[in-house]
Image (tube, rainbow, N blue to C red; front, top):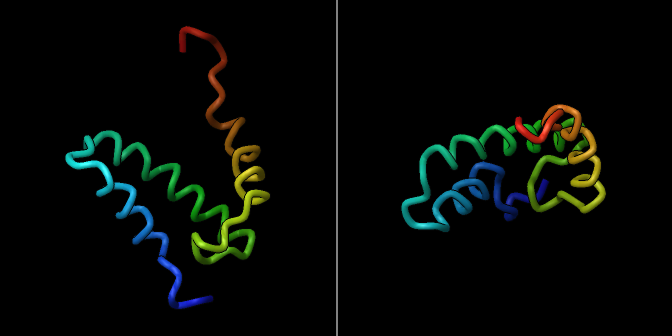
Length: 75
């Protein structure tokens, strides 16, 4: 683990603070997906966000898809 790489918390804080007055509900909703990515990465041996590769993101999306699929247009 490279101590010079930004941590998960620092990357999330940078995203959160990038837009002035980002709405709290947006930040809270995004934390769930962020925590899921962090957990998924750890399971695959990735400890820092700078180590995330496109292949891991593809696998993460595939893993997440069944949990967030909307069964109908109205939902």
